[in-house]
Length: 333
Ligand SMILES: N[C@@H](CCC(=O)N[C@@H](CS)C(=O)NCC(=O)O)C(=O)O
Image 1 (cartoon, rainbow, N blue to C red):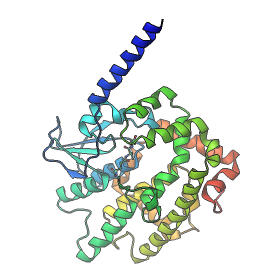
Image 2 (image 1 turned 60 degrees about the horizontal axis):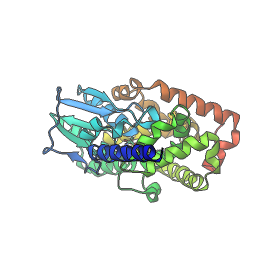
Image 3 (image 1 turned 180 degrees about the vertical axis):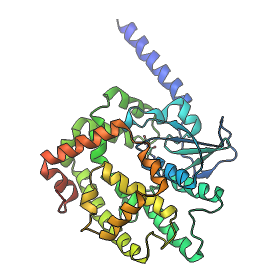
Image 4 (image 1 turned 45 degrees about the vertical axis):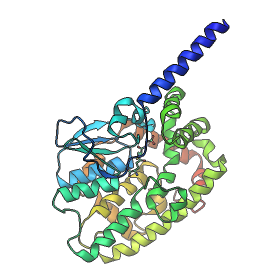
């Protein structure tokens, strides 16, 4: 019996070490990598996910520019499994994160760099013609981005990071449908171990357990305060015109569109804006939804995410205190 158990343990270890060699992960700098050649059939191919905020940004940009692309939908654990650390996706992006755009076989990484690359390929569309507006676009695009190297210390600087923290209740809701064994793959092979560990915790605690996680509550409240400040700044910026750069619709607006969509998915929109609350921001969000690029969001909604949102909304209706605990501000009913 002992022999059998030892043999099984050795077999499992050998499999793990072999598999780990096949699934090597490491960070990849943003931008185009002309030295890497991947198989491709179409000029533009996008590896993406329906829920992923950064994938949405790239889809919206491609749609807005009218660039056709072949798609490869890759699951995140929130949408079903750890396909981002599968052997086949790690060949495309060894960092194991989405999205990745492949242009004529060369990968482009980091969503903020991908949209700039696409705009440049399209002859400078979505980049302000007025040179004075260029740093304005860059600043607002940057604030909306999630930079890989940033820790949560950057919440006050980055609305993108705030959005990631505000998504936690949606993640916890999504985990209801994900079996534990699917999370194990992430623990074994994910480059950023903190991510699968967090999902494990969310699965273990459920939506209702989140307010008892003191460090999470602290960050969540901070993210709410910081996001409110970001939106106050946006409200002021929009006094200058319809879009962030006045009358020019740019990459900055695309970067913010996906943040509003995430607020809808994670059921926080009414906390941050409405016809009475930051009316300029509210009107801006209505305009954003009329853009052709919005199809990059509306055409890719996933039933598993719709169910996660519905569960979260229902939970918040039944537990009025939940939102107040996580936001530490008055929350719209
Ligand atoms: N800085 C990166 C962030 C990419 C990122 O974190 N992507 C998420 C989805 S929005 C992801 O792939 N997560 C997979 C995981 O961590 O398991 C970008 O802007 O592209």
